[in-house]
Length: 376
Image (cartoon, rainbow, N blue to C red; front, side, top):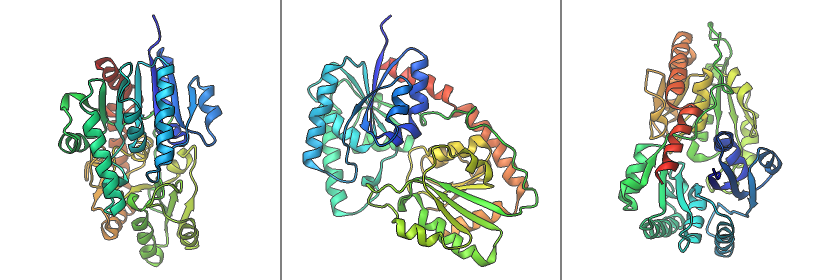
């Protein structure tokens, strides 16, 4: 039987490595032929060695760049015409925009547009973003009428937005919660800090305002003298192409504070998660945050915002604590509750691991995605 061919279109290799690599390898193990179109930084060799065919492209995510975007439209169109892919799986706002235009006259491939959260253009109120959003909505409204275009979301809230904002037939929208977590790689580990000594609070995400990074730092300042036994560790990449990125100079200045430390992106985050007593994600908007899935799988109790995506994983006072968005005070109170209660931390961790195993493991998500591929 001829192998089914799937091509992912993703902005950058580090994002593919973090969010789709394990799933892609699972597809290869089960007889699929996988390709990737993206901008490569330093992970091309690793990805190619896993058996994935790569096509290099210069995505510029930060804003509309008509010349660059036009070149990418023609380039992607050429790749797809020269390769007999069964499905093109595009992830993220900019790849969706570029791929949707490049395939308007292409009837050979079925396309899946995966919304991993609605992104900065749906949260920012700037004039430029308003224009960008209008263009994006118009294009999606246009291409949504094509029979071979389908849509993938990670939570029911985003599904409702697609139906209302883009007027998309709900039969063309599939809901799959994330790309799966490898529960053997992110294994469960008991945290034995019974006396609540030297509590470590971890936040690992892209270093953006909309991830709640400023609120995380504000709480560390408040607790600097009141609770010197609590240390705040922020780990993540400075996404220079995102307009809400925190500046490097600010992070270096914050790290001078005795109870606060920023570390750059880690390819293997596990040792830091296992070393933490509590993990936080006070984000403003999410699809389905991979960092929370990793925390829950490893047995780290979670505090996160009560927003779509986050509250798909965490149920308040059952397996974690949900807080108000953009509220340092809400985050502060939640941290104090868990920092002083080892039994509650352990209970939340055990329940979270069970939720991951039952709903978000790589094998479960793989089976759901195979059904999506079969349906289209």
